Image (cartoon, one colour):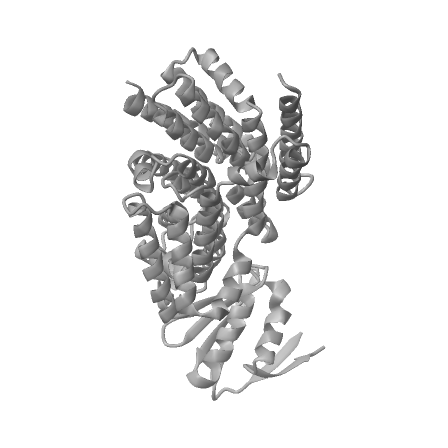
Length: 93
Length: 426
């Protein structure tokens, strides 16, 4: 399994199963620090060739729901890591 | 028949067969076929270039540039989510809403671009509601082709007809095709909604999730959106008055495109020009030259004479023959080469006896555009959606589509037959 950490002062991340997918809820606390990075990640997955790999949904009050296909779960985590939304990621036995 | 005419028919038929077989890209085949007409001396280069309809090419290019820039603003996503919320997240109503948006989009943009913009947002909405995207995708294919029938710029056959016949203006297309397209659209969507209503059920909780979405966040660049909307409105307004101000529709579209690029800057120029579907543009170039070989050698004139002999010059019989032949042919072969061949044939019919060509033009437009709904290979938009769906695990097979598309296409042609007969032939 994969574990990850993030700065809880900047945002809160909730992860759960959604049917056959993974679902993330991002509650952004520091808009200036987190939002530009989240938008870049969204733009990346919106512009790639797979339409249903990672789908972003914007909710009010800077809350973002992201449905991630199981086969793109690691890709998504790595994108979060690349843009420093998560600061640590590790494979754990 | 002269030897030149026989060679021209041979080149045309081989090229046509290769286009239908889809073994080699249709643009390569059409361009080689066109080049062969010149090399074999059927037409000289000057005549070949004279036969290329630059108005069709300019109109397509201009609209593709405007759409490529507008697509970056998130406008379509905004409209789709906004409309899904307006119908309270009810899947059947969302199916109707997305189908209507696709039809309206297709009427003013090209079908392929419209479905390219609508399919991702359809996946997004259906995923949120945990329902199959398949009914929505099939409905969007059908309504894209119906919507495209409604205006002069909605579908390549209409662009070609409008460009070839100066009297058929943008307003004339609206006056003659929009109402019938709306009737066909409403009937088709109603049937699809009835057919799919049980397959697209969701829970109240998921609907509530959709209702909570913030559609305004989909707009990525408000300033760019304002510029795009102004230019889009001015361009469409320009189409309405292009004949009054004696300006061709291609000039209107290209003017709109380059004024928008002037407003947005170089960055968008480099981004938008590669998004023009150059393969489609060159496909047209090849076809125009290919058909010029048949025109110059008198083959088209002979075909027109035979068709008139067959129908004994009767306007009703000729109109209905064109309508049904165009629909059936367009269901199985690309409607662009078909219309490219039919246009000079109808013009020739005008020279040799039929005085009122108007019913024939509208029959050709309705048959060629609506016929695309008959099979999965009937129109480019069908194949694009099927390809996008297959990549995401939704299989729209030839037979699965035929089962729904063909009867609905036949129904639309029956409605068109009644319309053509009542409006133009009695």
